[in-house]
Length: 280
Ligand code: SF4
Ligand code: SF4
Image (tube, rainbow, N blue to C red; front, side):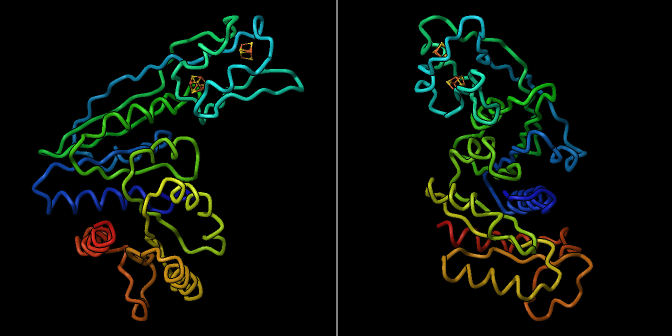
């Protein structure tokens, strides 16, 4: 997971999956949660994917019946309902609504109806005993959280799942984190890196999910690396790996791993070793 897009997160998830598959005697699952940008599929040209349509019953406020009393709000555990007293209107947040239907029971005058909609697709493919499961949103609307919930249910119990989450700290990410046991935050060198991941850190701490960092696309930004190392030491957050940008050659001082060498298993062996030692 990462705060920004283009950090190389998906590529790292795929590389880690390939490495773990190469050493594991047990089935491993790779799950693509970036439902608006399901790039993982393109990483598996040899794999045949089957797609399941995922439908959900979405709540719909009936503005002709609704009295804007707000009584239904307390029925929503996801915090997806809001009363705008200015217009007035009831607003359902597409980033939070799981389409569970609880709010419908909260309105005694039937002010909330249901409408079945396609929320997206779940594509699944196999690589020997291992599996790849990827969510792909239906682009005609923004209500994608039920698709993320459906992905949560497709995680094979008892097997290791490596999940590629979408960037940022949207409702999709929070829903996907629900059963996570450990998180890897992929960061790129930038001045505001700590400010950018602050919300993610808060969400992980709130859920007691241990986490560590992988720095990707490092180009010798010494002050950035020192800052991360200081943060790592003070907050006791492990750095699982530093991967240099493919154009950066002078890597002797910190001996980072090399992005140009991503096909090489050693890069993921190093990261995996640190992940496992901080996990167990
Ligand atoms: S949908 Fe029903 S409970 Fe909710 S604000 Fe409208 S009238 Fe009140
Ligand atoms: S369907 Fe469920 S998640 Fe969506 S607004 Fe209603 S109670 Fe909240």
